[in-house]
Length: 269
Image (cartoon, rainbow, N blue to C red; front, side, top):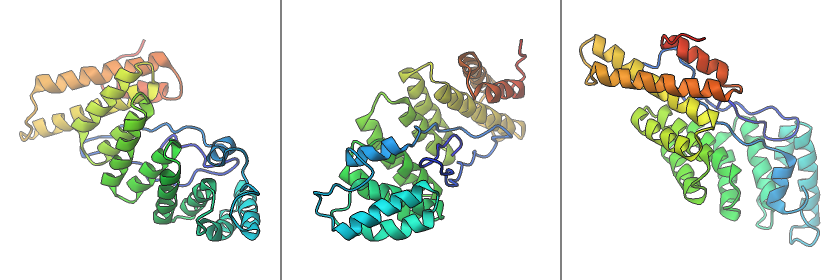
């Protein structure tokens, strides 16, 4: 998804499919999910102190060495070596959660989405309070075309973090990918209610209103639409309102928002 952060220090973000816009979306850019920066410190939080298994753990010494070497390989960007080293570690019940988390990113970087999801589900089960893994799972399930599981994971995140606007943006993007435009609008609107100054969710809401407006206009022109011109105009005006809000807020989405305003025929000062 656009806006994804790298999985670790110095590593490129793995290619994750961007959600397709529904029919009638025109040339408007897809909605975006902003993910939290992924860092060594974040991965450390799974172990609680260092990116290395504790010496007092029940993990055999040979596997502790593999885990440490696997992390070093991952830091250098050698994901094949990292996978080879961390794979045997993850098979042991005493493996610390961070090893499975990094193994999942190594798998995904090598194009193996299903194994990555399996490892991350183990992380979520072991450390349910580790929020980043919910977003990671949603992304990988979306890539696999398993939208129900993507939504299910994010609904669990919503229960745990009901005031996290990023959760609503993530849910809405998956809904939009499924073509559930009305549901996506409702979800993004809930996100805006949580934080009206979050440019990301405001942009997503504007984009989705534009998608619905453009689709309705195309259907109306061929006589098969059920949306009235007045209703379509409401969607257009709401899209303009939220694009304008993004421009005011500034940041990297300000320019795409200006492009959205141009598409909708709104003059810029």
